Image (cartoon, rainbow, N blue to C red; front, side, top):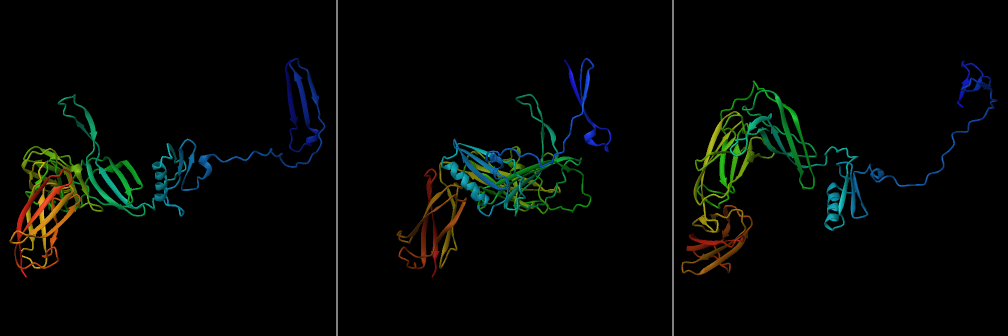
Amino acid sequence: MDLSINLSIGDNLGDNIGDNVNLTLSDGQGFRHVVKPELKPMSFAGFPKLPGLAAADSPLYLRNNNDNYWFEQLPSQLLYVQFNDVANKESQSLKQFSEQIQQLIIEGEVADMVLDLRHNSGGDGSDFNGVLTATIFDKPVKKQTLGTEDPVMTYESRNAIFRGDVSVKNGLYEFDFIVPKNISYNYGDGKISLYAISNDYTSDASGSNGKIKIGGTESNSLMDDLPPEISLFMNDTTFMFGGTVGRNPILIAKIFDENGITLSGNEIGQGVILTLDKDSEIDVSNFYQANIDSYQSGTLSYPLSDLEEGTHQLLLKVWDTHNNSSESYIEFVVADKNTMYIQNLLNYPNPFRDETFISFEHNRSGEDLEITLEIFDSYGKIVKQISGYVKHSDFRVDSLKWDGRNSSGEKMRSGLYIYRVFVRSLRDGAKNHKYDKMVIIN
């Protein structure tokens, strides 16, 4: 049988509740029965209390979420690390915290690690000091592969407008650069890419934005008809024109322009272009880096490899942001990689009275060298021997000095002396020596 219950509590707010509460029971056969319950007043003493719950720890991820960073070692060599804010604590710096975790890993106490960043607000970076590398790209352009071996494919590429390093102090940085004239003038989405590393190399940061607008022209831009200044070297800045190098040297170009240089452009041949031995041109723009906190000067470092022995010619052409260009030329000699070459041995001043400095050039730039200087009198007797080591040697060594005294500290008399420089590579033992002469005047 079906049973329904209906409870009514009067229709008017002014009614006496005790007189207007009706309980009606009815079934499916139409039977109805109304009950008027007797209501009794009662005092309210508050809601009943729930029974006490057993005390329990908060979930791990909620335990210390107001702490900037902390960790806890869990069973099975699991390390739980919570990183909530990029800011040093008074009790422990970020560097110290990182070193503590690294030490646990080194000691083999950690097999797995959980890094919890769910409460991380990122911080304001005010404790960050370091160097930021900024790269600004033009709008993407469509390019195609040559199709010499595989079918022609179309892909997107971006030309770099600026690439340089910027100082970051207390989380703040700024940089300037001049947009080159040879960009595509239509407006579109350029891109900025940033990467920063702290001075102590313990933390880094990165970010990018592919929606910066690039295009148009500046009607009031400054006039510039001066081309870039270029200085070329091989391996290091002590290199002299026509010097000797190994088969895998590095081209170093020091470049300056009042308004900066063009890294690449829409016109063929613009950017930074290298020509080796009057052969085909190579765009080496991606190997240029502006000096820190400057868009006007920078360095290009381009590695050459497997060069044949003999003399080589190299031409570098550079365009600035106002479409002025200049060229610089250098020659160098590639020597047998298994041979130690010594050239341009000399001492200065010569003649000398109190001291003289000995220098030479060689083809083992970047290697650790053992160097011995021997001084002979006019009878062929050794009067002084000086030995030492040069770490990661430059192309030119000029650290040798003789004060004109023999091994006993006695001042040598005026006259002609012969000296020999002996050089040995600590990498493969290649060695050579060379003689020259000097004069003492008292």
